[in-house]
Length: 255
Ligand code: NAD
Image (cartoon, rainbow, N blue to C red; front, top):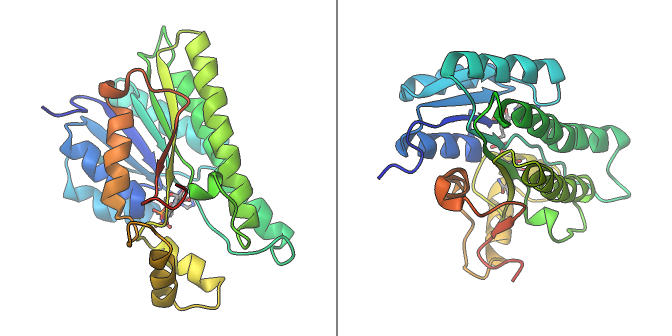
């Protein structure tokens, strides 16, 4: 049985990494349409032809007008919105002493404001009577659960995503909107983000990959497809009683 048969989903940061893995899995599980919404619209255009369910969309999650356009177009072209994955995110390595105010603001802008706007627009589209309920999935991180000495801005942003998720979940539950909202907290996952993290550290990408891996009880980093499996569960009707939950997927790092 396909677990997302007929559903319409929008995935931010859907052109690469974890977002693209989620989009691919959603399509395999029968989603009718998966909008690949990315700041890098050209990359979304490049990968979209691989699956007939994929629809590329240029979207900056920090811009309210981009959200209005993307969500309204999704509803008018595909008949509604069932799943939003707020996946787009950036990481900057820096301690409380080294991170600049500009870097701090950019991280909060994309990770926190972007997720806030996504939740707000999704609730608008999903709530009855116009909407038919739905699932919102926010990508936080293990860095939204435990601190790291050199991730001041990223830690703060992912902690905010964790509690914003719970607030949205309670708001929608109390009003009987049929909208669930949950957060996913991956440990280090093999994507291009490694390059960003390595750029701010004293290690090469490969050295950093090995170091991160050595700290994981299961002895390896996550594959993006493994995060996609959890997102599929949360998006599906099997998770009908799951809301406001923080789902850790980290190979035992925070155990
Ligand atoms: P990635 O860098 O591989 O891909 C991120 C995508 O988001 C890119 O396609 C980029 O163009 C897009 N993006 C960036 N800013 C955007 C904006 N303003 N608007 C729209 N799109 C934008 O990252 P990833 O590793 O796939 O990470 C995805 C999410 O998972 C992020 O929220 C990240 O914080 C979280 N996460 C990643 C890891 C990891 O180890 N890779 C671990 C925990 C959590």
